[in-house]
Structure formats: C-alpha cells, structure tokens
Image (cartoon, rainbow, N blue to C red):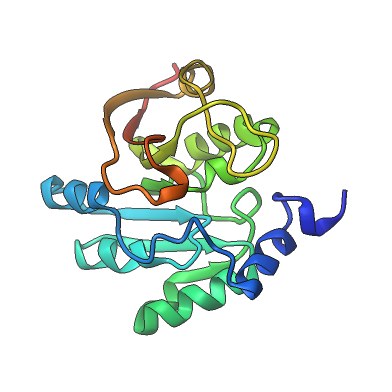
Length: 200
C-alpha cells in the first residue's frame, strides 16, 4: 500500500495538512471537554495522543493538568506548536505505540479522532496501550465516533465492537451524545469516560 493512502503512516496525515484538507479539525475545544474540566476537581498527568492541532492542550493546562501531547505527523506537530505558542514544548513528535512514556504514568488519556483514524485491525493495540499507560484507576476520556464500518478513515466503531475492545480493562462510567460535532461527525459522536479496572 502506498504511504499516501495508508492512515497508519505519517505521510497520510502530513499530505492532508499540507493541502489544508482537515475536516476533522475542530479549531477549538469541544463543549463536552469544557464541561468535564468544569466539574472535575482532580488534576494530574494527561496524555493527548494523535493531538493534531492541539487545541485541548491549553484547556487541560489551564485546568491544572500536566499535559503531554503526541502526534506522528511532523506537519501536525508543527501546526500544534504554532497554535500553542508558549505551550509548544508540551507537544512531541513520536509514535504513540512505541514512545517510551513510562508504564502507568498518566491519570487521564484524552481521545478525539484518534481511534477512528486507524483501521479496526489496530484497535486491540490501542486498547492495550491505553491500559498500559494509565495509572491504576486512571481514565480514558473523550469523544468517540460511533457508526457503521467504513473502508477508509474515519473508521467509526459500533457498540458491540467497543464492548469487546474495552471489556477486559475498562468500565464505562459516563456516556452522552455530543452536541457540537463538526458536520463530518454530526450525530455520531459520544462523550465517554472509561475507568481502568483491576484485572487481578
């Protein structure tokens, strides 16, 4: 498969940033995340994988979190650094699946358009990696894209698939429809909070 049509390769995303074709770019912070931060008194370390333009980095930082954001597309990282200014150092260029973060170091991991950017064959790796990177009782939170199977990104997930994916390591503690989705995702997004559970 050519790199330019393989969403698991940085070139796929870099070419889209270069062409200005970013229909997933929210250009701000979703209302559901603002609500979460307003009602959450906890702080700690948060990871934003596949951060894209990185708008949420500042929101977490201002709420008192120690934020790390990562993307494997150089163009995405450059864009995020421009958006974030003095917080640019919070963004690193790297592969979420291989970057050495240190096991169990994050209290929160924030999801938005990351899971749906990769084909379903990578989803088990995603779930396992999330569980490895979260501290005990850590949470995977964010916006998940639901819908029928697609042969190209974005790749929505079904209720059955998400249950199978997360049942070993996570328990769903909150789920609500997103009200401010972009046209591309309208009616398909849910804000969800998944609590890491003890596997013993």
